[in-house]
Image 1 (cartoon, rainbow, N blue to C red):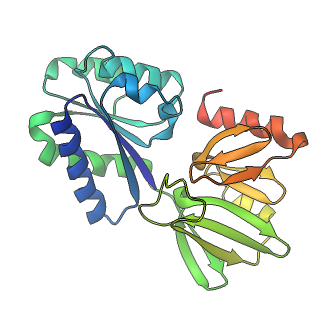
Image 2 (image 1 turned 45 degrees about the vertical axis):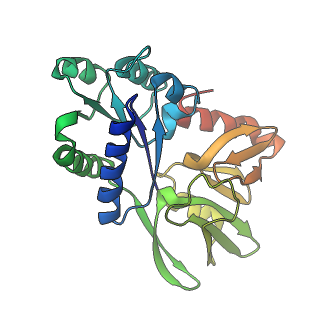
Length: 247
């Protein structure tokens, strides 16, 4: 699931970029969410936004907090977000490279620039997939869309987010379950390179979907709440903070 943000103080360009991205992502049959922000202040008002998004399209010339300043705060959290600067003025190109922007595109070339930009970003990101032999057959899943895996006796249950259902705030809305006869220890090894965290002997969670940790509970962006044992809590929190780059 690609999480994309568009930050521009002009509604026309927010909507134009959004429509072009929707067209591109649907043609590629990719699952996504797109959030719109009117200013750098609004974007940064939710601290997790600094590390939450895979791709951010950022206008440079915004009032008060401009795109370069906003991007600098994103990078201060060690974010691996793919930053794309969008502007009507080419004078800012050098500043964009200082915050490791992946692209710098002009507002009068959006129709052609965005598809090329997205091609380059997706190639760089190399969206990861994994294949498991579930009870209903072999299935390939996007790792980003796996919310968590739960172990119950001799089975493990994969909770997987379907297209267009991110941030629904409903625990079971748009989520399908896959069952497999496999130990969670083995699954943990298979997903070790994809940002999964063992928060409990029975739960392996995709850190990308953890909104926060508090009161010995992991709160997911779907609304699900999973327990974290007291003895494991500090170690889990430390690993999560290292992954997110924020406290």
